Image 1: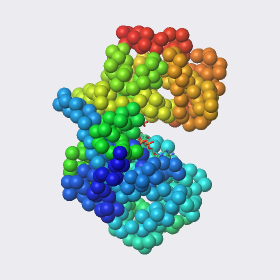
Image 2: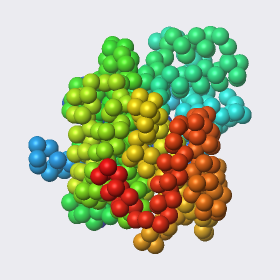
Image 3: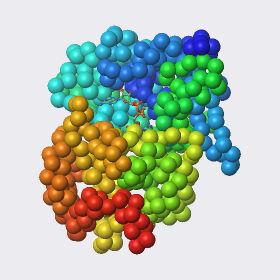
Length: 491
Ligand SMILES: NC(=O)c1ccc[n+]([C@@H]2O[C@H](COP(=O)([O-])OP(=O)(O)OC[C@H]3O[C@@H](n4cnc5c(N)ncnc54)[C@H](O)[C@@H]3O)[C@@H](O)[C@H]2O)c1
Ligand SMILES: O=P(O)(O)OC[C@@H](O)[C@@H](O)[C@H](O)[C@H](O)CO
């Protein structure tokens, strides 16, 4: 069977390289690159994308071997009908690995075609790392790479004010663009790159805060035969997603002219305030995932679609979202419920297979960012505790009941399936130590009082939370997950 690039022409990848994208992973290739491809197809844009691996290991070689061409399969239900939209994405020019060829990245910095920088470096990427230097090739952290990149550009164009770039970071952290800019300015000051450079960062460059939403399920390992037969070629970086998409970008309206991806079927909103969109999405959709997925996995489910077909878990998710998350948000109730309804439909999408274990990655920081704000706000507003979220907290702790096995922290669920628990090394170390005691009350106390997990807060201070979480954790040691959940939804 032929490879994708032997049958699909690279139509737009030879256009001027106007976009640099830090992140060659599934999400951006199924989202931003699809939007750019649409804009190229419609004639609204004429630019190709240069990908850059933010870390040393990645998909760069595989993408280059395919000449940048790959397939996106978007699947879902539209107007009650199953749809499968296949698009060949041909707007990627190439992928740079700066750990092997730093000069290629620096050459991009000197490019007169370049206008836009997109990034997805996960929640871990936009962070300051002490010790990075402008002379490193490359500096380790993503913001340090951006600072060195901008400095090269500043020097190449003698600080010309029309040579700044439009930054569109999509990392799911608060104020992603503001934070990226803040850390870039921190490196510029630390590296003593001069006031003119600092001024140029501030005045010539445009940093947007953005919020993205599309469920991307990545490489369809279990369905690859189906796709190869359907497509008639092999594609090692084919990516699957839902059809739904939303990119909310906070920036001046005329910045949209630089990057007109909103003029086609892509759902792009330029706004002056991204925050309400972000809070709504992170608390309802991502919070819905994190609060339910770990318990669902422990009970024997493997995919989101599986637990959505299980009435008990579906009711649990509804209880979390409608009774415990929505009452903590200040947006119009009708709008929130409409969004929640669409999230329910998207989770139930029978055509995408979203693995619970994929969503479980880094659940400690996810619980803090996506579920805890709803729990604490509920407690503050109602002077009582949200039952389902307290159970989710206990299920998260139970999911982290593991031991090191063949170099991997491994849990074991009631049906004896062993599963990898993936999180930062210090998180895993903490849980391994705590679970050695097998004392639910002591474990709950240690987790709740570990301020480094909860943005500096001691959760013991929330009235009744320790007892509640310890109670559910104790029950999870002996009782079936579903039966505990049944009690909660029947309350
Ligand atoms: N998959 C989805 O449905 C979806 C939807 C919206 C947002 N996201 C966000 O995307 C991220 C995951 O991306 P993906 O689904 O493309 O996964 P992926 O594993 O395919 O790609 C991850 C990308 O992040 C980079 N990366 C990983 N760790 C990094 C670090 N410490 N510093 C810098 N870069 C790093 C990798 O090099 C890679 O380019 C998550 O943070 C998630 O919140 C995913
Ligand atoms: O991608 P993660 O691992 O940060 O989070 C898992 C899911 O909640 C997430 O991928 C959602 O599906 C996505 O954020 C929808 O836009």
